[in-house]
Length: 161
Image 1 (cartoon, rainbow, N blue to C red):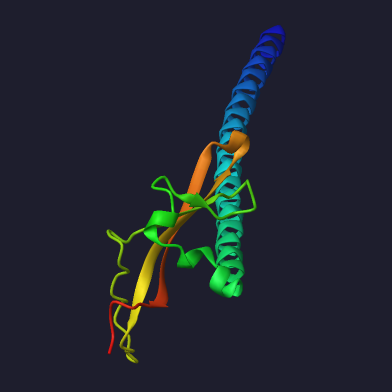
Image 2 (image 1 turned 30 degrees about the vertical axis):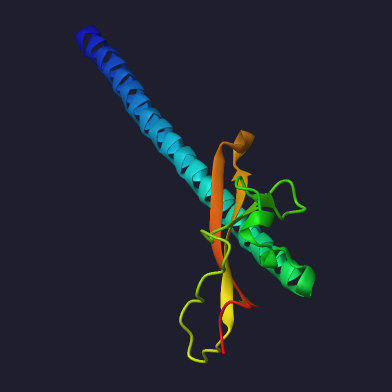
């Protein structure tokens, strides 16, 4: 009887040891799953921050173009190459998203306009490029830029009938 009691006590110790090993294994699996889910959350947050920055940037580009075109003859889109500094001209009022305009004309004359269906003689284009940028993310580590090409039609005394 004492021998049977001794074997039962040893078996209880083995059950306890097996249960502890199982708990340890389940804990390791849980820790692994939690760390991978935190990485997924970080990736999702980064994608969301980029999407928000991109939407803000596109909105700023559209606002800037609408404002300049509403100025009519006073629009800076009509500036010649001599009026735009080589380093560019800042068009933005929003310092968070600068819009820098450069003139792409290589000489005094304006360039031929891109092909259109309804061609008009005497019209040339002032070719411009506006680069609008935004920094986003924690500590503004990332930058997103949109480059917009603008062909501003102008009449010229050098061309036409």
